[in-house]
Amino acid sequence: MRRPRNLVTTALVLTSIAAAGCHDPAASDEEQVRGVLASFSMSVEKRDYQRLCDRIFAPKLLKGLQAIGLPCVVAMRQSLGAVKAPRLTVGAVTVEQGKADAEIKTSAAGQPPSSDTIRLEKLSGTWKVSALSAGAPQPPAP
Image 1: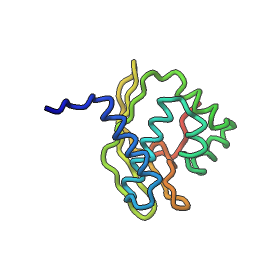
Image 2: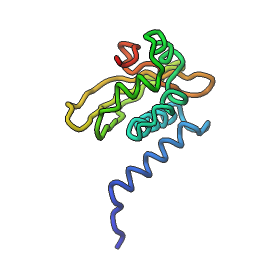
Image 3: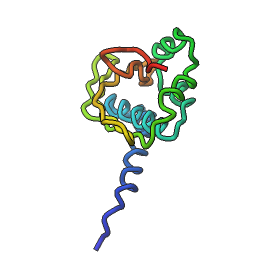
């Protein structure tokens, strides 16, 4: 009789598959968007703000940070540095004409859960996060 996989192992496998989808040109746009969001989530969990700024955020989002005089990594550290056990769950993803909106739920220890929308844009064949809330394309407050 086969033993069920450990839930954590299953989650890691699924996350790896999703992350691989963001680099697979044969993957659908939705799979690529989900892969970018998996990378986004892992980068926040690992506090890899450099990866967020260099590989995940679109130039449009970075310009907003520059406009308020903060380097991206510093802004992310100030915004997310104290967050404990962050989690991001992706719901519905809508893709249309090089733009995608993903419904997400976020949670962290000691904070109420939140439902939001992340906007992504396909730039030179790669999906990038262009707004952390589709309704308001502003970077997080420092």
